[in-house]
Image 1: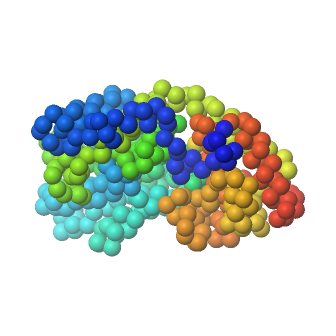
Image 2: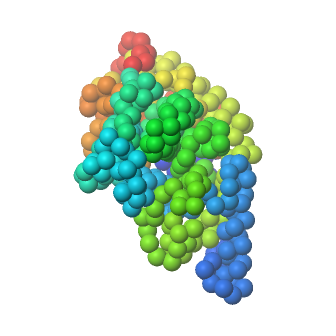
Image 3: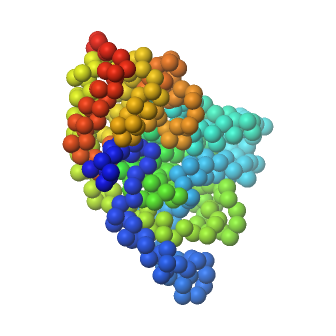
Length: 419
């Protein structure tokens, strides 16, 4: 069961409990092995050796270089480092950038392409760059939450420096065609090199995708990739950014200055216990990925079928075929999600209305309105996300609780519709 108190937790996209094996690996570094990794004495050497081993373990699993893994304080910081770091690096070398642009040599604006359903930690730094005078293209998604790759291609300009597309959406679980985008950019970048133009780099936020999908950068062909500890049964307060090693000058510039930790890209005393925990969590993901995928997919489909059985008029937000296996985002027409969430919480069932980062905001989900839903329809939707600890008994119980709550709130009739 999800926990000892018979409460049922189905908000694993918001956060996950720390795995017992992860906690065990972390514990010595809170007390016995407490040294500062920047210290030169034996305590510091013990700490930096542990960090090196953690970094080496993650690099080995991701099939990348040791120094291509940068530890950060969160996935939010990693996304900011990717986006703002790219912009800063280009701005620092702006004279060379302008020379390469040829036809736009007098224009120092950078152009970045993203989507209109990114996580706030991508969307907000893009907005900041936009306010600073740079140009951002937000690709629209279709009714199921997918971008059109041909629209991405049409959006590319001479001054485009970065494409940032979320791998799997945190609200509706939509899996974007990352491999298709990378193949397109490889083709375009080959032509750009021939014309003396700068490369377009590719970043993906893989936070939600990491525990279920193939995330090796050499397979995805991405230049930057974000992942997080607390979404994969690791600790909160730790994230990481994969950065492809591009020449001696590097790919990005730091956004936090100080002592020069993390190869000069992220200053600050290293969070040794959390780094150890992240590495262990990544190891367990790679060990159990296939089994977890199959288990939660089966349970999720059971839950959907149980709910549909008694509530034919519900709407599934997003595609059922091409989404994360643990994700359901369901609209219950004419029922406020706030009302339903309260009713479920009173029955000790934890689900959400969407992204945890904006859960306290009363406005409608911008992800759902991007699919074409009205604000009213978006506010009728809840997100249910399963985890590795979810069991079949909980699924049946949750379905019964939801169906009873809906029966109390409204008598549903009709047929399920996928928008």
